Image (cartoon, rainbow, N blue to C red; front, side):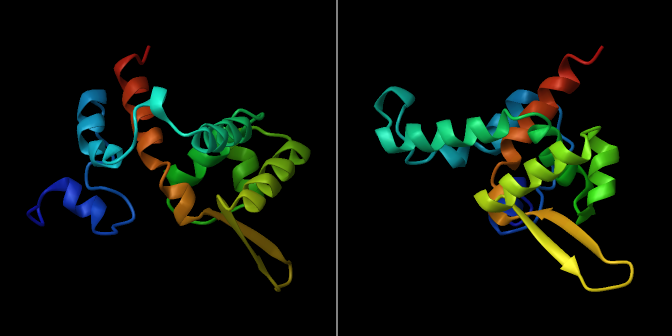
Length: 147
């Protein structure tokens, strides 16, 4: 692929593809189609992979989980607890629980600063960033059906 090809930019390790604002769902699918290389059809998927998907879905369907990840993806920078609280509308208790689950699952990193006053920042890990195509597709779908 040529260096100007958008998929080349994404595959070359750039944090976000050039076309991150793309709103056509078909274009998003085409952009990330390379991710399906070597993936078996869903009806031929090994049992272990189904379990992995189920575990991920269980994690992502908890209260405010998707909005937390979405906020982290949109900002493209580490966020403090209070920023996530404001962005998601999650209560401190729920936000704390979701962030703990994400850190344990390896989807979010937590960095604590020994300052006065102390603060903690959260950001998606490379494993979470691999979910970016799913968020791109949701964004494209929302743009298409925006009221």
